[in-house]
Amino acid sequence: GANSVPSADQATAMKAAGLDSTNAIDAANFLAKPWLIFFGIFGAVVTVVGITSFFLLTKDEIVPNHEGKYWSRLFYGFRPTVIKQHKRLYIAWLSFLCFNCAINAFMPYYMVYMQNSTANGGLNINGSAFTIDVGSILLIASIIVIVIGLFMDKIGKNKVLIPGVAIAALGFILFFFGQSVNQTWYIIIAGIIMMAGYLIGTAVLGAIVRDETPKEDVGLFQGVRMIFVVLIPMIIGPL
Image (cartoon, rainbow, N blue to C red; front, side, top):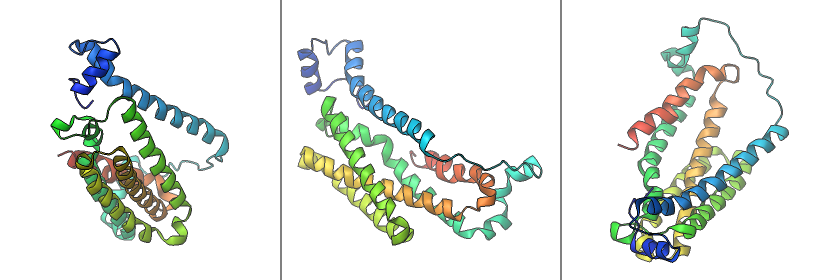
């Protein structure tokens, strides 16, 4: 959570709800309630999409390839010869690594910034307002990315990637001034621009990696993908 101690506005809201802001349990329950609603909504959406996809997506007919020695296949993607053969794939991974390092530098503090009091440098958005603002940002940004994704191949992935990263950077800058403007509409618009740019970058880089991965050896490169896209960025980014 953003704060373990309720702000003045939150204390007033707690008092109106018949709760004691000085009671640790009441304060924790009050501060955690928006998160419960937030994760409940998006958990339900993911569940519905998963169940729906189970019936709509065609069954995967790929048969696992067990040829070759285990250790040889495990480190296949780290061989210099393999890297030279698939330069575009590894360049895409390096780009993904840099992109995710940057994202992980701010993403853990995104919600904190929104919920922190203005005295602590935040936007002081809590309760139902927080749920509505974040929900609106994520929903609209997701719709924008889905629409752009329909035309990604026609436009060209590289032509979409650079503007997407630029849009994300613009959103970060606009969001930074959210406290100065102190208007809900501004925060939502800045958040949409920021998240849309981030999701566009993630979608395009993921598509490029998919296109450049040899279809006959997809499984052999998944360990390398996890190291470039997840492991290293999650270590470097928060630092």
